Image: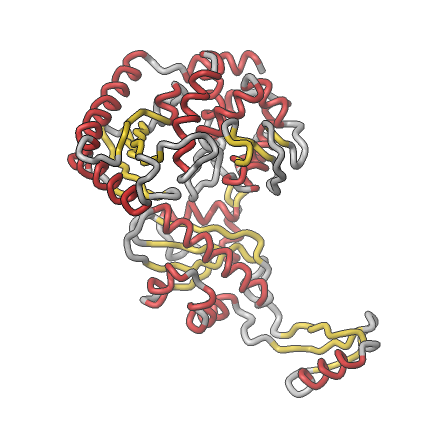
Length: 443
């Protein structure tokens, strides 16, 4: 393992020319924002944050975060309005746009480097008014706590996570953030120690110190806020993948773990894929991803209630106008009939109620060997496409998140398989019917 880590360590070191180029871009952006903040009495400072400030950035994946410090007495309305105005005015030459976390922030690109202009309140620890208020404390803590070797190990970890598709805090990914990567290396001391520990980690293990209880598979505590579980933002799926690839890497270290590994699609299951497609009015990627993930979860539940077994589901959007809700079903066609279990015959009033409600519209009724009164019911829909079309036509207000209802009312399409899907959507949909790349490390 040491040999592989040593080899990767050399590859993640950023060259001086790239460092200087990034610094020039960062300083340009900083000076543009600095000119704007002088126009607003509510703003009391400006500073770099994120991986750029802490020296933990990867050469090909380095955003520059510029944090605007607001007086803590500033109203939330002014906090959002002024920060957006500053960001748009400062970066107007670079086509700025709004992104969302707890609060909106402005993003733009200067020579392929993302610049994020993020507001935060000037508060003390534990007096948080916004999620970004912790960021300056994160920067200060990591600059003080991480040794040069640990900073390099953070880069190795980021490369490891990125290559295996589980890096990124955005809601579309729900993976491990840059800050979580820093916390893990700080807590375990090195990439090697982290791999050895994660490969044998037990459920509910707590990384860090806290007196609070959390319900995530593992718990990762923010060093500057013992009440904050960083792992809450990471999906169970990505936590599981991290544990599995750590075990595989520990067992058989290889450079392959630091290369992108494609999933292996089982093409014979395309006909088990139910696709709901709709167009939406332009909005922030963060907002649309949250909305379509909720819609997918709701519709998966409705399919199950309708008798269809949902094996996997996911959402996808081109972040321009098209969104897809994807469901991998055990079968898209099911039996027209099903057994409905009633109460046990010893329960007098419940038995009478069940019989009177179901006798007229049941196909059959009998006393089962399970001591229950059973009836045979006929499904309204045995075909998943027809089921979904009717559900969406009749139940948009209850079955679809409020923010998507107007989009669905303008129209939607329901189909089976991949015949009408573009190449990029096929790739996203194909993940549902693939052997995950995580498992290919074990072969």
